Amino acid sequence: MTTGPLSGLRVVELAGIGPGPFAAMLLADLGADVVRVDRPGARPLVGDPEHDLLARGRRSVAVDLKHPDGVELVRRLAERADVLLEGFRPGVTERLGIGPEECLARNPRLVYGRMTGWGQDGPLATTAGHDVGYVAVTGVLHAIGRAGGPPQVPLNLVGDFGGGAMYLVVGVLAALLEARAGGRGQVVDAAIVDGTAHLATMVVGMLAGGTWQDTRGVNLLDSGAPWYDVYETADGRHLAVGALEPHFYAQLLDRLGLTDVAPDRAGADPEALRGLLAGTIRQRTRDEWVTVFEGSDACVAPVLSFAEAREHPHLAARQTYLERDGVVQPAPAPRFSRTPATLVRPPARAGEHTRAALADWGIDDVDALLAAGAVAETPGRSG
Image 1 (cartoon, rainbow, N blue to C red):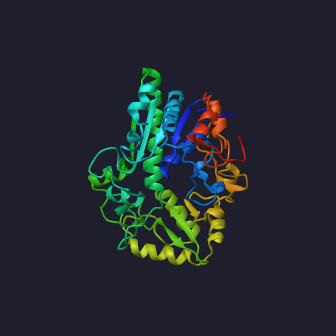
Image 2 (cartoon, one colour):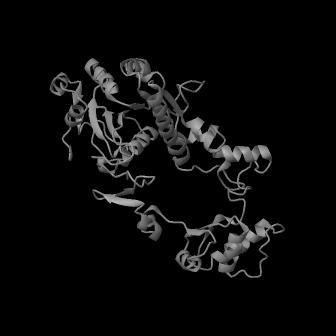
Image 3 (tube, one colour):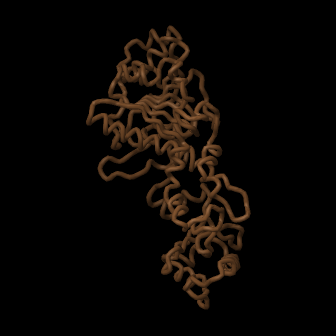
């Protein structure tokens, strides 16, 4: 039994990759009952199912969407759901017979969430793409990197998960609130290009106001300022310095022992100051500097690997990383005072819960669907 704030919410997820599964995982982390519709025999891209963490928290039913009874089953699930999530190219679910028109006809209160890179319309809507391309056309990728160097790929966190999945979740929850007030659902068109551009609102405003240059590595937050950068330490590791405000900068200089450097940065030569900071920080190891800055407000932090991060005292105290079924993974976020989110179940194999999940959702002809080949089941570890 889930305890999160979305407990009682029913979600159908048409399995995909990347931002769609992340959105479904987040809803499941927060307590929603999410049933993932997988292809029979589908396997995760990441390797073994146990480490497919984007599949955690929900049950999987294997459905043949080329079988008419499989298509009808998805419509029946949509009748019982509050939300349906899909991440196909525009027009695919319509061709399958499980598009918004068919599903909303069965369930007018349904929120139909669509996750794509380019959106449901526009010149590129039906073309293939990946995170790096979506981020590239928004202007955001151009802004990430050091002066004189090429743009740097920010993993797929800015596009797929920040500009995509998180906006899908926000859109779905907003549409749910409206549907519960007005009695009618709607379609949520979450495009990674839209969300990524929206994430850049502050920078776009600064650019318009003349306080940001459309050039990499010369601005306050893109490594252009020596007091907001990353520096190598004596052991080849790195220290992150974020002493933006003058009083934090003063503490930075004090802890570094640079007592002869003027705390007023107005007349400072940025590159000379950068060289001084780099040379000073390179004199000690990363962990030695951690000790030096402990308890200060200099806004300095060690750059940790994922393996190190789980052991950081603050993250360990908050249990930001948890171990579940032998796999270390990020804990659900954010935190709730009365309805805590939990890790409900490990990642599912395709079809692991076909019989149990369909029965729980009121589908009473599972045996017939199995016999017809419309659905399949896979022996699993849990029910």
